[in-house]
Image 1 (cartoon, rainbow, N blue to C red):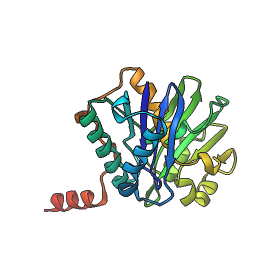
Image 2: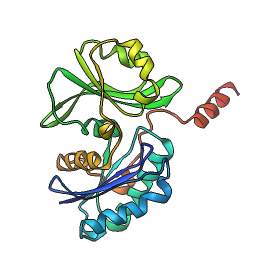
Image 3: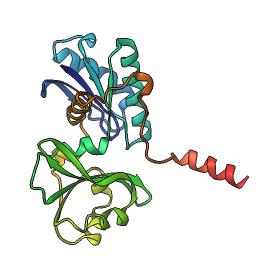
Image 4: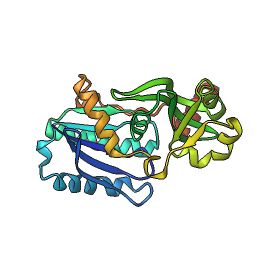
Length: 236
């Protein structure tokens, strides 16, 4: 089974093709937030590297959020278009859960916490114990104030943090929790299409495939413009 993974929720777009858990094509961009220009050529390249045609794809897995609102829209729109044209089912993948999969299964006493910068001292975060069967959610994925999320990790002896929130809020994280905190190495710290494809394969195998019309973004909160509009409507 060939599965295409699309990741656009972070700063660097990436695409990957996997067959039976083996990567057959992969590319990650070097330009920050240039997803609109880069994603289609990236997909074309990984298809070519894999020696297949687009029509040979069995599943299109896309990271549908949370993360960059613009990036999410680009990734989901691209996956929808391919799915509609090819008649290929999609797998909607959580960017947080996929990010946790960057880490190999480890001691059950370590909580793996992907954390994405949501600005204004807020994050999108979740907590997972990694097993051979995949990530097991222990802290519900969602939007949090930084201190609120960190307080939920207090029952765990060790936590491993991933995501761009570790870059932005490193000092604050250290002030909120003094011991038992590790930050993942840079090579696995950020979102990646290989993990999206891997998780998408599992979702599809468990009956989680959807048609293009059912594929929806998961922003986890309203955009700033939408919040202002709703506030004006309520005040008016």
